[in-house]
Image 1 (tube, each protein chain N blue to C red):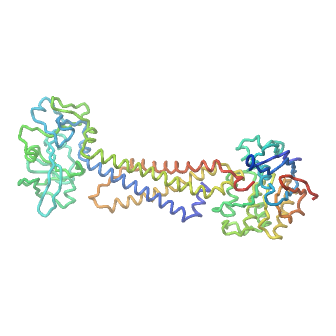
Image 2 (tube, chains in turn green, cyan; image 1 turned 45 degrees about the vertical axis):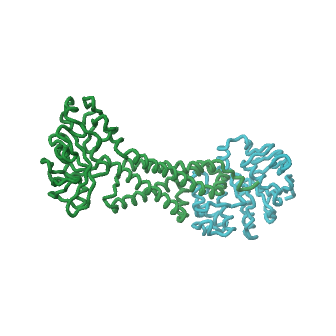
Image 3 (cartoon, rainbow over the protein chains, first blue to last red; image 1 turned 90 degrees about the horizontal axis):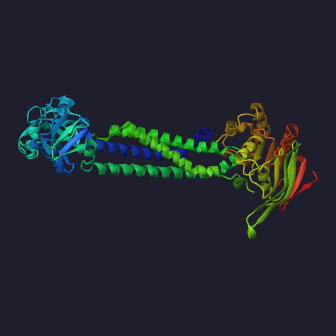
Length: 353
Length: 225
């Protein structure tokens, strides 16, 4: 540590540049991770808020909520309890006077079932009548107020916003929670249809009926359109960035070590143990990476404050902490590569002879 | 009291037609309390001689004994400890750690060798004698060549080694400084019973030596002191 700190103190410009590089890498990784988490959350925020374990869809729907329709006849053998609920889903375009069109997900609920009962409202009240909706706060952010009326798709019937709720996003679209009769109207289906899906908070819940297929919530989420592909893309991008940072940090430390080999050779000739020099190199890498990470974290926090709310960013501290630890491990790994040279440095190469 | 003994040392580099015999049947003994000077022109094998004596490389044949212990028989770690605790190297390339001040060069030694180094007063006296006492807060790139060389000498002596191996320690010094270094080495040998071996082509040191050797074409011979 003594050698590491003294060198950083003396070679300020060189190490400032290296820390700047690590800051940029960590900033990029943090922002990408936050965006990936934000996007993932916007796909599933509504589902996460229900805390469900099982989802039942029509078996021909290919695990796609939009394609699923359950008739009352198909679900009549399935007993629903306090932890189970019908869910009717219809993609809609919401329009209102003076507002831009908004693509949204209409979710029809039964007012006496757990989703509607447990809905946490940030303002207003539950939707009780057929033409009332509780809207995601994205509508509030866009300038909608309680009592405003929106029309959905090409329909003439206005729906009154009676409440707002946070974290109501499905497939990156804000959710409008309404009633099941309203869902039938928007979906253009008759009263014989019960819902798009059954959801349950019970782990052992199973839809009973030949046309029903039961999935775990995770299976259902993984099959959300584009969700897995999007997550895989981000995971690969972050993974590649980690590998690239490993290479960049290793190359920098390698060059630094090569430049110091002559000094190390003299120190080795004087009997300074190789482990002292190796620990100086590794502790220097840790100081550089941790310093870079700290500044990268501050920059990311500043970005989070300044970025528009329309850009989905989510800061999950355990995940970002794991990414930070990964970068520290990357730095240590990068520092271990040139240590081989330190262990094998030949003092005679400097002294001659 | 023999301190360091080289017997029948042979060392060559390369193979077959490119083989160069650097040292041939070298027999050399340096004793505590003596300043030994090994004089020879460039390429005569002085540095190879010194690195073998200090355990930094091994001969092709022959024996190196330090206080009756065979150096090649020691492990690398034991040789490191030996160099740290008993041998002071003053190198021709007097590489000081560039990002440490003169004072910190000694602190580094303190960190790896916790005991047996010069006291603060003894260090200040040594620095005073070498004329570098005022330079303790300077970095190597703020020193002249001669000042760096004297700092390198001080650093080698700071761990209070029993044996000092010096490779061209006066190459960058003017005559007054050479006299001071010569007297310092002679004093250290006499008063502190150190074995000091200097390889050089600087004949100005000859008057301070107890023994003078000539190294020429890989062979060593003793000269009249």
